[in-house]
Length: 248
Image (cartoon, rainbow, N blue to C red; front, side, top):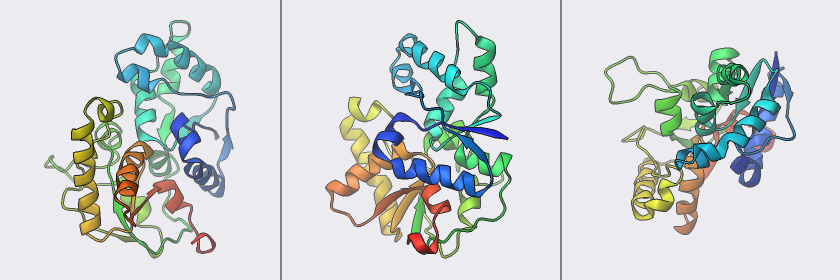
């Protein structure tokens, strides 16, 4: 299979280690990965603000960059969900439709396409799992706790393959962190309070690290952790799945 690696703009600028870990992990799993060098923002910030018409050039460029691949993989649930739900084109809607059906968040690609059952990874730390709203409710990476249905978690399935990791049990396992994109700007006080509550759930249960498939949520919580001079760290799930004894 030919896989195109989509690295969202904020990941590229602020968390390149997560992008590198994603690439290295896919290469370890013998995936033929390409990185379209002209890729830019997917247009989610504009579309979520009610200015979807301003995102059309982003849509056109995304189609230009990512057409012709078997799969498109990204380490960001929110950006993937945006493309799945909102990528359209006035010039070539067929190409947009095709891409919407071939883009995957990293975790769902590993579990649903590659069907990974074993990983050579080691991360001997206590880790709290943050389920992002986009990943949980949009991409269905795990079962929502309010539903009376069979429980499952694709991120947890992968983390269970990591040697030495200890997952902490949270009181409210799928509560929102309060980021919400531009919500954290428009409703700063509410956003910060929600972030503090989410962090408290992790810290009081002994987490050394907070992980997630969504770096936007982790970025929000990292800001709060740093301002409070906390020793708890954030880490993208790709970095844990790609970790080894020599990296620790």
